[in-house]
Amino acid sequence: DGFDLVVRNAHVVTAADEFDCDIGIRDGVIAALGRDLPAGRKEIDAAGRYVMPGGIDGHCHLDQPMNDGTKMADDFYSGTLSAACGGTTTVLPFACQFKGQSLRAAVDDYHARAGGKAVIDYAFHLIVSDPTPDVLKRELPELIAEGYTSFKIYMTYDDLKLNDRQILETLAVARREGAMVMIHAENTDCIAWLTEQLLAAGHTAPRFHAASRPMLVEREATHRAISLSELVDVPVLIVHVSGREAVEQIRWAQGRGLQVYGETCPQYLFLTSEHLEGEDLHGAKCVCSPPPRDKANQKVVWDGLENGVFQIFSSDHAPFRFDDPQGKKAAGENASFDQIPNGIPGLETRMALLFSEGVLTGRIDPQSFVALTSTNVARLYGLYPRKGSIAVGCDADIVIWDTDVNVTIRNEMLHHNVDYTPYEGMHLKAWPGVTISRGEVVWADGRAQAQKGRGRFLECTKPLPARPKSERKLVREG
Ligand code: URP
Ligand code: ZN
Ligand code: ZN
Ligand code: ZN
Image (cartoon, rainbow, N blue to C red; front, side, top):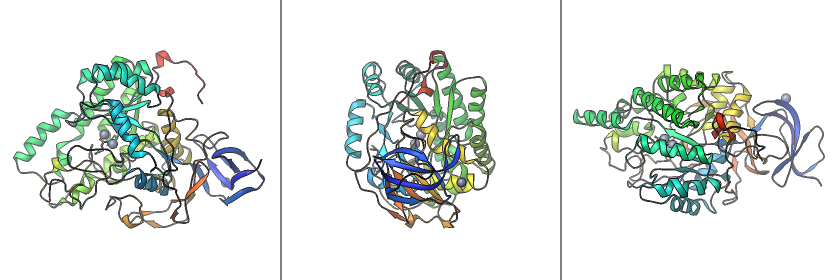
């Protein structure tokens, strides 16, 4: 009965395949792939350009309430708009439980923040910071059953951290209920001890943030997280891996047959600890945890993307403005490094950075790019096969890539509400030309065309990769 939209002459890349065809879209879903499809009400000629599944950003922070006087600069409108303009069609930000708060209250609050604002589809991860008996026995299982099938736990940050016993008990719930667990792995006591020594010696500048969280603290916590997951016999995903030492732990675990997954982010490919230098606060712009390392570690992270240590590539977008008393300067112009809110923006630049510097350089093949930025994210978090591929029946979330462009990244061209980008001045040779979300063009010709509130909340299924090997059997998804 005709197509709403036909994307003609696409050079389609999926996580497995590469082929030329037209894509017929009806009611927001891919209805046909083939040659010489009948006319659609709207047509886009992709003329041999790379056409790939829209990005899924499996780790970003949007309008997440903070209890320290800081405020995230992106809400669900600016954040998802920025994502769409950068080729991302689904985001998974975090509904974060404060200690003392019920998980349900955190989820309800987060829905209120997202509702009517998002321009692309979204699902929520939970953050479990207070695993009380009621949370573990009742709330978490109920929420997992309702479609919140992944959650993050922290081994550091006083407001969020769990001790080993709490981690074990929380992992056991994930195992029983079939949820994916993301772990922020840094040793909190090592960080506190080092921070105290640095501050006592007057070392307060942003660059000492890196000194307070050396790779050892990430290595130790990564190993411990892996051991706890082995003990409980449940898969875990180590998020925002920064360099060699954590990579070695993950590779070691994978080599032993443990189900340990890894995520890395643009900051570990393109920034180093030198970006934190200078005696003024400018280094605060690149303060994130774990901190960026050095050039040799960037190479290790690239290698991990190429050789399968990492399954996913996420932004960890954490939108704090620089020149703002609710942002990086919350503690004033003379803030010490430990008072700077952690995290950097990156929702809009994630896809193009990896395409330009990974795919066009030949470091990463196009299929792996799709897997890392979309398909694997959908699989790990229970959105596959609705999201994450170009196939009949999938949501029509599609990016048509421009690869004949010279783009110099400038914060002015980005759509987030942060007043800087760590990648200012970088030259890229690729950028999303058209972003299509459920069959609607949301970004084209350098213009955002996305209707506020059109994005839908996605309930996630229980992800197959979250099931322990010992308990697996084939269940048809979708
Ligand atoms: O520094 C970071 N990564 N901030 C964002 C929160 C987190 O831990 O992912
Ligand atoms: Zn082709
Ligand atoms: Zn984290
Ligand atoms: Zn994060």
